Image (cartoon, rainbow, N blue to C red; front, side, top):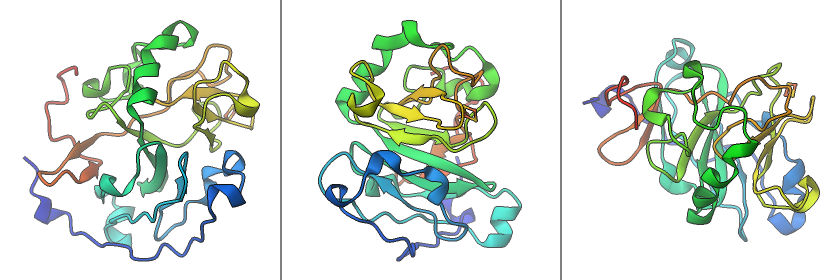
Length: 220
Ligand code: FES
């Protein structure tokens, strides 16, 4: 069991990022490169209103050393996504709705690695359709596995992604497509699913990125 006291929390009160309501901004065009180096929190909302999101980050020195990062997932509303940072990389925290999660197994035939058989891309306890410990909470490194671009959130079904699109992420660099669990669609230049970092949950439900506190050899 991880001792949460070892991971000193720093609640970021103001990320310094400004947000507009979905009606005021085209969320589909928002790139995830907006994550900042200090307070990293952003949202792409499906529902009305963009929630304030706070992340809890260790010191800059600790981050540079690869320290675990705590994140309060309760601040991420269903159907939205937030970004934090771990080891210098953007990490998406996706709070899928029940409908989004239920959709995931339905398009397995369109995916390159639907069953997460490429072991390097996720811990074994995330070898499931949601690639997650908690079915609705996805935790994914937000870097395309082709050449490392930052994919764009296309969380909503349909839209400019076409009527068959059920929500996910689109990498504008060369056209790779990923579902809401970060699994890559066939025909994409990206060779593998997005990386799921090691993560776990503290006793109070806080997400801890960078630490396995359950048996990392046990499949979900
Ligand atoms: S870097 Fe994403 S498709 Fe090439």
